[in-house]
Length: 320
Image (cartoon, rainbow, N blue to C red; front, side, top):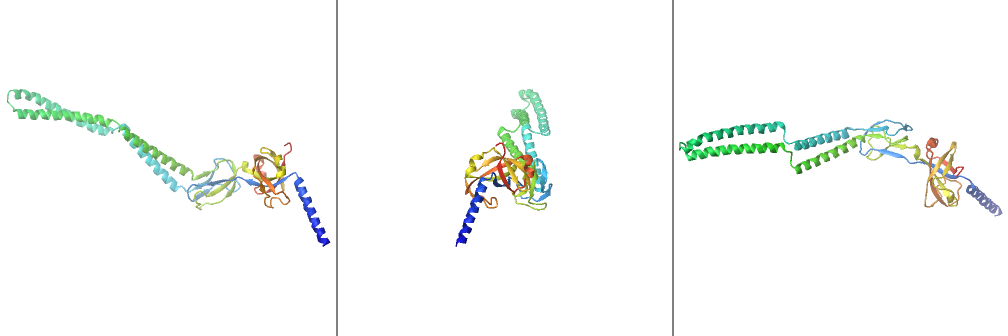
């Protein structure tokens, strides 16, 4: 019994010493983390070509993935043809009839004027015959009506010619203008869909992972390629309640890991809510129950020294 009491006392003493050493140490435990950029395609299309390899450094707007473009290209062509047709119809309505059609009406008007002049001349010559009784009143009325009809036809063709020179009515023009705007929006949408067939890098980054490969057809919206910009490499560590007042956003910290040189980071976030001790893989000695998760961004020029998922030790940088 005395032996067991001695063993228990020794273990309790060892745990207390370990806890004191960890509480008094100048570093906090954590791990490296990355805020990844997941690039996908809005449609379920087949991948035609992957233009980069895993681990490559890419520049902003660099082409990364090319998708099969038959459907998008066909839709764009249809939309462009529809826009051209609607625009041509609007232009035609704004400009009136074509020159060839106006020429036909002008020819009809010239022929009607000639007929009207002939009827007028005949009426003038037959006026003396009518007065002397050579022709009857019925014949005179017939000649008078014929001349009046030919004059009316001239007036009708003049009005028709002027009407054909005018554009369409305002309501018709507004309706057609709306159809042109709608066709243009459809063309813009088809053009945007076509442009999405080439997936480009939104910013300078490293290709972290390639999830799908040429020939595969991922579901719409599923990530195809994953990027990790240098400024998105971060460290997550845990601050015990007793040391929470020592850390503030914007503070510089030093990050150390096994087999790598120290790098500097800037705290950009401290959780407003306490949580319990994280899994043992992140801290094998810590005894505190209430911790606050903090996040620090690695300096851009030093981000390449850090690998995602590494256990690290974080301490306040000198001068803070």
